[in-house]
Length: 141
Image (cartoon, rainbow, N blue to C red; front, side, top):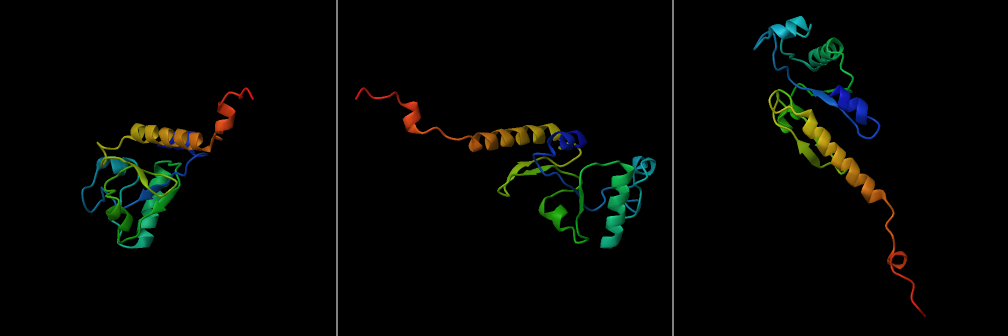
């Protein structure tokens, strides 16, 4: 996602949303989290979740802007974001792409193709339209 962000950040807004922890130390703990220095208990307060999100962002050297879901998990629940999922929201606020659930449904290339098509459509719609007069041959009168 960092490469996609670097390529398109001047033409689209990108955000990563930190939702509830998929592999907390007090749940389904993973050795890879310990190695990456992102091993902590499931946050119980907004402040704990924010600290965990910042630690993940720092440890994983993330470049995307990071938002943090509330402790009530509204974003994670409304977007079925657990454990991770990609969305593309168009300029009118409509879902243009909804990826499958991660890790197997996490396909940044699909999102990239949809984004490219949206940007091309947007560029086409901004081109000035030619009037009928300019496309018709002059009359003999």
